[in-house]
Length: 310
Image 1 (cartoon, helix red, strand yellow):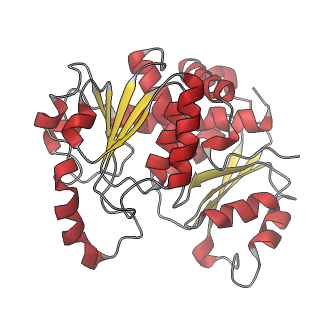
Image 2: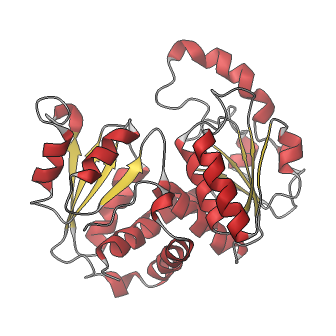
């Protein structure tokens, strides 16, 4: 039976840490893996725009001796003339791996349920596991052992990045504080909070939810934010959202309330003057481009893990 990565629930703590360590080894010694995907093909399904996801997966396959096929579902019968299930059953006969960047999480679940090859969630509205593996790899490079570190996430928290950060941090034994405006529209989903608290209890760390940005940032090792304007936000809501999220903007004054050696992260794309100021994202504490590069190495490790090709 194929092994899938749809959310970080699909990995045990040891598997998650193992993938991170393998990714660091791949980054250090890429030539050792130059034939690891020889004669293997990855199907890359895209319903959403992409820069880092497409390039990192396609380059990753190429550097390991494999091949990536870009498949834009705007020109596809998938979900229209042909069911998602039939698309999955058919493509499984051709390729060794599938990654999909879709809107609805239920669509990737349906695809995986009908696929005989591993399926990787490269982003849905609910979950973004590949990004958080790269994030944890980056934190590990900069800070060493993940256990006991504190990450604070600021801003819109009812999104794929926050959900995956909660699962990833608590599985790795990291403390995480999430600071967002009040209201279900902006807060992480209850099922994820419950899951995160369970992992936090198991791994000796803490998950905290707050509406106070300054309180959340105290003693943080990592300060993290994401776009206030996700792909599904209509243009007419932008001005209202800017006002709502202004208290959660990461600026130099807020960064001073974290530890002096705290690092700043944003999974990109980023809008300077919105979720963070220019001096923060382009300043000495920012690691956003290391974080972006590590998508390449961590996704190689994920693909190898799912195919057991390490």
